[in-house]
Image (cartoon, rainbow, N blue to C red; front, side, top):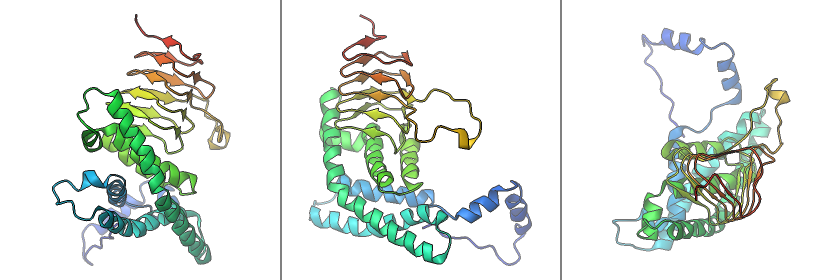
Length: 295
């Protein structure tokens, strides 16, 4: 986890530090009571090790190959305590008393173990995503290029791990993982979204996929696509529609071209439909229909 810096006993910056901490009334107390989260560096290292387990062949370029199984096992051995520590930091903010903190540690270990046990399933899903990219993009020279270069696959891989963590009860860390991918790729996938098999993102920059989005199998989307929510009148946090489906459903075999915007929890894009670039959709589209596509 992140290291803590300490000033010298005569530091001229102590007074400035005090003024910085007191500048936003209420924020410091709230953050202090909830406790620290993993640092950005922690998340970056976590992502690097997870991807090395999921795509070990790509991450070992320039080596003599060696024992691939042993390399993966060693990486998992390094990943496990890092994963447990990050999950705990996401949970412990609400643990309270020391006895509850111990319960949070046990829960973090359980969640971490479940993710590690799910890695074969996640890798199998990613294998289908890789093949979907290879079959859909004539510019791809090979599977190795897709794994090494494609930002869409990078974002999908992190999403699939984060989605599993969220499903198993992790807090905050799943969002931190997908926001790391967002910062690297420009692709914003909420870990709560549900995405089926053989998902292909082409180019990817500017894509937004909201929390309650449902995406079926063999869906293809291009850069700038938004799968979002219609605006609501905000009367305070307690009045927000928690638990309500706010984002669209995209059924199997749909293609959504660049910069299309599809909004609303009741909006369904039917199986095999095609949504053209720059389309603005707030209504359901029947299966097989082409919307906003020139002939």
